[in-house]
Image (tube, rainbow, N blue to C red; front, top):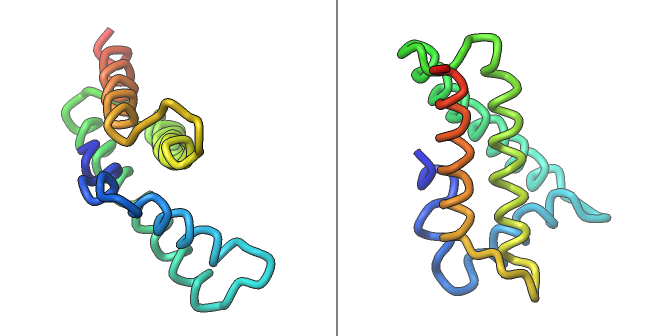
Length: 115
């Protein structure tokens, strides 16, 4: 699951720069309508995928139904933040470390649900 949101492609040289360019083109001072539509569609798709995973966990009794929206927003924000941090010069964050932290986040989320 974690690799769906922090895929192996991000390990390639220059991939993080492309990821950032994708966002900055759509959110910069002179965004094109097409770039904004593309980012909107990508964000919608990411949230749909994350909610699908969380619903699967809920169906297995691992996440409460009323936690899905908050867990979705937290996980997406964490993923984007980890990716931006990995791109930031001087930061010790790497995509691999981000995968570890995201895995820990989900492990803790699921552990709370079982208690």
